[in-house]
Image (cartoon, rainbow, N blue to C red; front, side, top):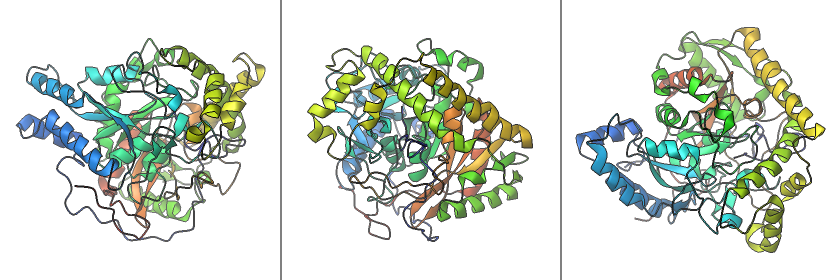
Length: 547
């Protein structure tokens, strides 16, 4: 599952760094809103449910409008390439949900709401699950992923699959985020020549562009937080074990998790409420039912009041626009009654990269082989087969970058190797008990705060992602929570020359209620979200959708 810019020797681009992205941009004017917003494209779950309850909208009409919007914006016009495949049964499913709406007992907020899934999440239907690779395009998955079973039970409609960084950005250190052999290059809907980040690139771009109400992404390190931030939306990376990973193409059982991506905190909380919970197919979720809850209960507009929030300056200072937005956000938090502790030192931050990459390489070989064994109808059965497939189809799969991470992983031994067990123990200890937990305890904090990332960098298939670090020994804002298996949430906080900039909050394991309360309180006063204008370049002209 996902990994934003990929892991490298010292954390390189794997735990995407708080980037010194492109040139130092100065603060620009706020992005102008769409003059005629589509009727359903940017509506919230609550607004859509109100209309459906009133009889002025039904799920079939909503699904039809979104499918037409995907055709106008994603397949033509701006040509985002965010949606890799739409569900051929979507309208029929929507009609069935409409027919049952009146008699459906205890209908939840997602009933009849279209949801997009990252294309590494299994669906036992006519859609494929490929992780963006042509190697997995021979046959659909045999059954729904655990979280998809929960979505369908709640009455959500699976609208389609989203493009992603192929293999969740765990194939090469030189990849372009949002590119896959099957789906091509996803664009950032705010400025089309900018990158959407990854690996949940399509999920983030689709939600930002109003192609679906909400989407599911997945993260190993940064793959929800980075694309959500760079596409101006909310992303929640849950605690490891809160959401089932069964039926999701893996990178690492030590760090992987799926999570919500939405345009506002309320929708993200509603989506998390549905997908959270124990699943016998994923032993890591054994404790999930003890912690899963209705997260919408924590949507408090005064959620900042009295909260002790620590600013991790080690994760700032690399990009001036991100720093400017961070300072504005701190001022807002103080004005709403938060107690800001600044700075807070996060111990051992510079020591996480080496054990992390060791763990991911070992886990990937083990986990991908186990996943492939669960898929029938595929010619590839092992990581070695995937390497051979890419070599045999290099023109389609490797026109821009190679597969050195695959090759490094294939050389690793079993999970009983001392190198693996020691790296795993070190990574978890330094990131969790001696890292985040220690920082929270020392200052009696509710959460930690940093910039999510700076504004989106230019897409560059030749050189890959333009993400560099001010300090090459320090990972990105996503890394501490990702390695520890603790929750994080990114929220839109401002703009730089029409490009979104976010802040990230992270805390102790199972602290989703606190983080959601803080994030919602911030969002309600910051009011930072604005719809994209599909500009061709920074300061350029909008690219019209095909009507």
